[in-house]
Image 1 (tube, rainbow, N blue to C red):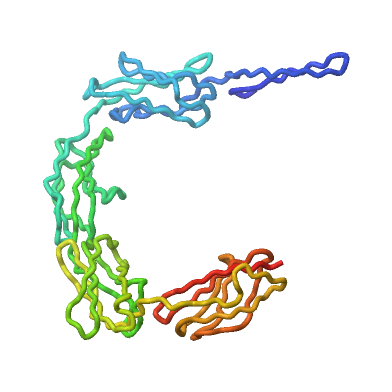
Image 2 (image 1 turned 45 degrees about the vertical axis):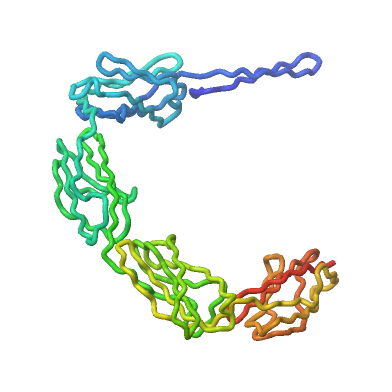
Length: 397
């Protein structure tokens, strides 16, 4: 029978045909615990990260760690195959000593010990001093890095919590440039000693060597501006502010709207919404500015656009709301206050279709695809891009 929790069911039958049963739970522990590995290995370093044991044992009761003349134990290590357990204790009292340690696994009926291992204790993190870089703004991608440690270590850095990049091994000083592209960074500079102890110092720098680059603005020249806003497309690693300037064509004074939460990076865009009701039916000029963290300002060309700042009206004459039909089609009649670029529909947020283009009125038939309720949303789109919606319900029996 295999080790572990087991169940025995006892069944009794009497002479009258009655059946009685009872479950008895018990544990089987016939196999010795098996220790597969301990860490640190012999002749290596011990540190404050703890001692680890790897093992197979289905009924583990306790893990005991013996360090020199001291004993530590843990009662909640997992049972099973290919398990591991770590015991962490402060090693500062043993610093720089040669110590022998071993583990002991205790199951329900017996215990097993690992082979003793002799290790050197290094209980303190390596000292670290970062002379450069200091927190601040850099106008070069060649960032000077100067670090010191009191012992031979591995020196490395990581950008914004990313992958660690090694600077040097078995060294006490590093003094060289590191290439870092434009952007804002939390930099972790770290030292790791032979025992695996780590020390970290963090710096915050901003690298800005390139001016903002504007790739496009919308709406395009000669097109319509509407209440859906003005959009700029750009490349900039450290956006500080985006500004929209706009005025009536033929006037001189620009109004300005600034936005401070536009995204940073390559192939970004930012939209600024403007209420254009007072400009309706007129032409207007606009342009954008992008300001980076160094104060560099790049402006887009001035663009002249037409303004459609008010919505047309869309009337659905037929079908009326809650209209009842027995067939899979229904007649419709619509009219708008101005010619629309298109009128389309969507039914139950599923079926879509077009009714007309470049139209102000339209009478025809359309599908009623679903039995039961059909929620039909009519969508009129102006030439400026403004959208007008009206919804009616048609019930098909």
